[in-house]
Amino acid sequence: MSTQPNPRPPLDNQRFHVIVIGGGINGVAIARECARAGRRTLLLEQHDFAAGTTSRSTRIIHGGLRYLEHGDIGQVRESLRERQWLLQRYPNLVHPLQFLLALDGNSRRSALAVRTGLWLYRKMGNDQHGADGALTEQARFERLLDADRHFSVFSFDDAQCEFPERLVAEWLVEAIEAGAVARNHTQVVSVQIRNGRATGVSLRDQLSGKEERVEATWIINATGPWADGICHTSNIQTGHPMVGGVRGSHIVLSKFACAPQAAVYTEAVDGRPIFVIPWNEQLLVGTTEVPDDNDPGRVQPAADEIDYLLRSFVHLFPRVNVSKDDIHYAFAGVRPLPFSPKKNPSAVSRKHYLHDHITDGAAQMISVIGGKLTTAASLARECMAKIGMNTTPPTLAIASDSDIDPTLEQYVVDVAAAGAITADAARGIVEWYGRRALAVAGKARCSADMRAPLCPHTSHIVAEAAYAFSNECAVTLSDVLLRRVPVALGACWSAACSREASTRIGAAIGWNEKRTVVELEAFERERDAFLRNASRAGATRADVR
Figure 1 (cartoon, rainbow, N blue to C red):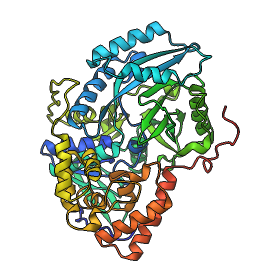
Figure 2: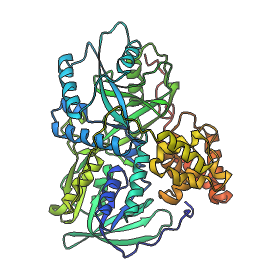
Figure 3: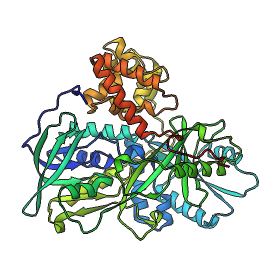
Figure 4: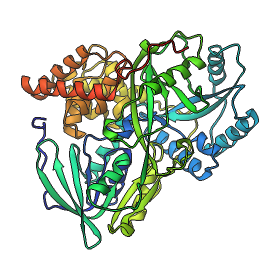
């Protein structure tokens, strides 16, 4: 890649209290907590923040009804507490979502057990079940089901973070504001070990090729499915793998007429639990669970996984005329579950744990194993306590479910006026940037080029891309369009949209023609590798019914 928009100061021979390796939601959360505690913190990511497991998740913030089924009460309590905090602290990014649990007569789960579990789940989460419209939505959903099969349908409440990439960007900015130094596109070549203790890292800037060494008191390996790789390249012997990678694949479908507004939690054709979730004006269906110990950076959904998800969808909604041609794209990620070679992936605990490498000859180094979107902040606090830092758990405000911020629409009006932009553009900025929306609007006011939409299908504007480069560590076009301003995940995105967006962004921030072409080509390669066309992934053309 050619030179980045903002030169990055050298790091060579600098010393930090904490170096966090890995810029997914867990790594960014840890860096944020450490910086806010006043520790000099360096955050390193080999590709881009949120580009790995975080952006390949099912995008729900949930207490884990499935964990309750396995008797993991502690994890359910933690998840529900963190879910409530996220709803209150980041309401622009994390939204309440009704879920419908649909079980047919062949399910091994009894209706009585499910009712009991849901009652306990609601009590633990202090949910107000029976909100207006819930029964209506359930009735609409039931009309879509196979009339020849008996279904039991139950309603419960959880939450969704449609764009965890944006939550990571928000936490990244908060970490930097607290004093953290953040570097994406920076590979950790190895962790330096001296006298049985981790003392720093050797790193390589992927953009310039420059290699540097940095020292630290503590090293946190939060690389998810890459955790064992970091140890391997650093000659840290752990005895056995820490991570047992499990591939989870999803398909994204067109949203059909009368599609449920609620998320659906049901059983696939083999009885495994899967979700059908309204997402980004589309339907997200997933996920699978397939052991995968290959390079996590090259993970792809297999043809049989795509067929499996599509067959399960059609099995649930036989009246909906859906085929593989309705799949916008498929994607996959590797869950960094604890290494459990003798267990079925479904039975492996989703609880995170912290591996202290003192017994591996690398004292002062911790590897984070597991974790999920919902509990990233609590994992970060646990990690801080492990390395001897004090942290204060977040407090929850007392609020009614019916409370609506009366200033929200006025804020949209204020942002529109500040940026001289349309109400739709202002609303999109408010939804993704929250309290930082006025700063984005300030860039929009600079010129007509900044106020232009990124492509004809979106209200999101070029100023958001400029803000990503100047304030959110974006370096490439892919960083912007796939993660900071993730319009390229939309149903209408096309090659023409890519060309238009790259041209408009390049003109606004001063790229020359050559740089614009290089960025566009790199973006198209990355998007194609991430969001796989179902036909190219090898899905069969047989009738899925």
